[in-house]
Length: 491
Image (cartoon, rainbow, N blue to C red; front, side, top):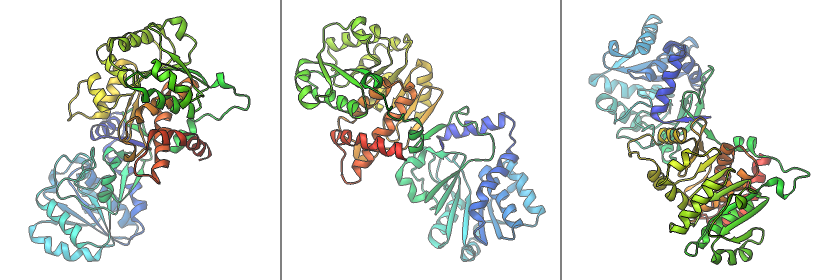
């Protein structure tokens, strides 16, 4: 399943048009998807807007009428001003003597009375392109349906009045019982509050050769995807086979970050984990996590020291003093294995972004939104998914932009994560994720797979803990990781 913002969905539609699909063919395919959801009803009212959502409703009305259903189609305004696709199907409805009813101020009372005749109303007023609250007659009709109709309301693609990107309602939003999202999930549906208006959401892909990734949509990464990627443990596997990894983390001031990252890595199956850290952390680590190898970080990290590792993560609790700065330079200049740059190391990188552009190995960046603002200038009005994809493509890196439904992209393949929950908003969560990712990267997953799998496992383990807890503590999450991975494998 794929997901898109308003801009990305518009680009997807345009991509289809540019590659040989006509609007009439796409509307016909869309109404085929819708038909199976409406054919269980006998008395059907369909709301027809001026754009392509209205065309979907008109085409659907023709097919349902041909099945012997009682169908009435309601529209507002001058149909001669409708979109070309809409006008084409409007004319077909007229030619087939299908009931087309123009709503006006004078006909609203009659429309309200007719609501009791329908088992279902299909919402084809406005699609994902709506950028403001429905006004005038549209607002009045929505209010009448919300307050006077007791049957099912099925939204075509998205309920009229719901913001496609945020899932927040404008004034005058239609409440749907079920939403049939065509082709892809809308980004706003990730907002759990949107279900008040969408009801159950079902994604229907059109019966075409869907170029989702080519057109810029993001894959919605769920448990089936994780199972497909997760490697089985080998019968004759040994610790070196699962990676010799290095965490460059922790400082006298920030001891916990290194400990949490180390625990996340060990719990995720890291074969041998070295932690290069401050003496204060190195003294604690054997007591906290005897499976890890603690090493007091030297003043200089040479290529000879770093060449034995399969994966390196630098940043959790590293600090921002000159020692941290020189340590970062050593790692980025003297190592050549796959690298994760996290936390404080991202702040150092933000002042030296040219170092990223010179890298010849996979590099994963794991910023939250505040850290990403230091790396990349963008405004609150920008489409965050588009900004993330563009940044990863420009800097030839893998970006893990942490937040609700974390974005993971290498500029070519892009994902939104299906796991995780609000109870995980606790300090140290990012450190644990960095450790999980280090373990997967060191186990020789492709870098984009290591990043996406780590994000999903992290969120999935958090979901397991949250079933019986108000908050999810990072240490509790790490304890659940082995079981979470077992459940994914057995899915």
